[in-house]
Amino acid sequence: MAAHQFLTDIKTIRARARQHLERGAVTEGYRADRETVLRLLNEALATEIVCVLRYKRHYYMASGINAKSVAAEFLEHANEEQAHADQIAMRIVQLGGAPNLSPQGLGQRAHSEYIEGGDLLEMIREDLVAERIAIDTYREIIQYLGDDDPSSRRMMESILAKEEEHAEDLGTLLAELDGGSRGNREERTARGH
Ligand SMILES: [Fe+2]
Ligand SMILES: [Fe+2]
Image 1 (tube, rainbow, N blue to C red):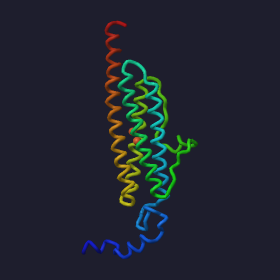
Image 2 (cartoon, protein in one colour):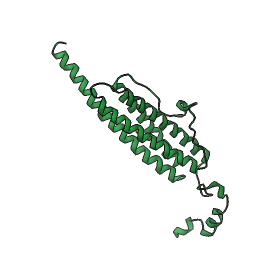
Image 3 (cartoon, protein in one colour):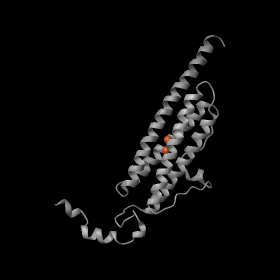
Image 4 (tube, rainbow, N blue to C red):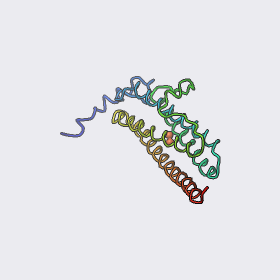
């Protein structure tokens, strides 16, 4: 069977492209359920914004002996989550939707939570939990998009890869700091304090 038999003939594609110009990038061939994709992308957008806010809070509140380098990491993550939010919002508009940036219900729309955390270790732990939630929900969104919306899928794949990097960074920080504080405790115990 020749490959071209799988393809819509070019005359049909050209004719279809002239219809519904108001839909912009969304053509007749768009196979995904647009409403569902827009809802999922808006949930991902809310997730990114909650992550920006949480990382910013942690950035400003980081204190203690290891605070400087950890705060720098928080800020870097906050900026990267903001970039993700921008990418997602742009894609929503491209699909003919509207990004939901309303503060009302933001926490409910988001997958991950806004948890302030007390000390540095708690903050890092909460950030790691949030990243791990995003990793799982984004993976599901990617699976849902499949071949029906390759552009949204590729965008979410690149964002997922970044969240995995974030999780790895936080895991390393957690191991270093947790190990360090445990070491200090053990040392104190050994010295009889
Ligand atoms: Fe992100
Ligand atoms: Fe992240």
